[in-house]
Length: 180
Image (cartoon, rainbow, N blue to C red; front, side):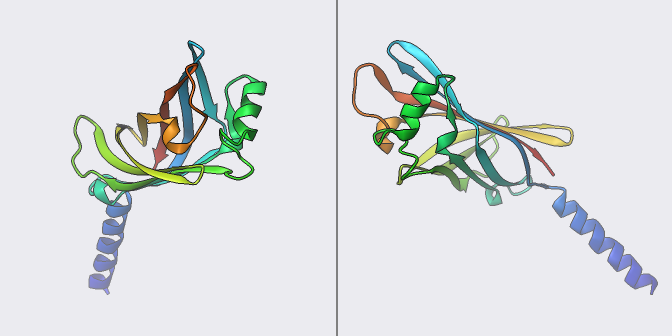
């Protein structure tokens, strides 16, 4: 009986040790963007974003990151511009393409300066392309902050048309907090 109790305690300890290395409770997911338009920087964000993350500190290459953006939630603090971005076929066309997704295909196993190389599959308007970014990880007590910022060419996903007033380059920032 004593041997069984010791074995059970060891099993519980090992289970706790393994699960303590997984960070899966996602909080405060945010996606924002910046683009030059008519010589001015337009800042925007998406208000309806969800994510599923499993960050394995010991074996980061087994980690998963998946995010979904509801395109209708675009917010640039200009209701006319937001309606244009949501409804126009050449922009987000939310009736036909209600979501944008970002899924990690490969998470680099080498941590360099608090970051990991992540290869993503980014899908916008039914077009999927691979993008590689650095994901910065900052552990602070009982939480982890993650952040990635990268540049996209909006024309690769057929967002907006060609023009001299609007930049083709969009700076995107994704952040979240993780709890065990």
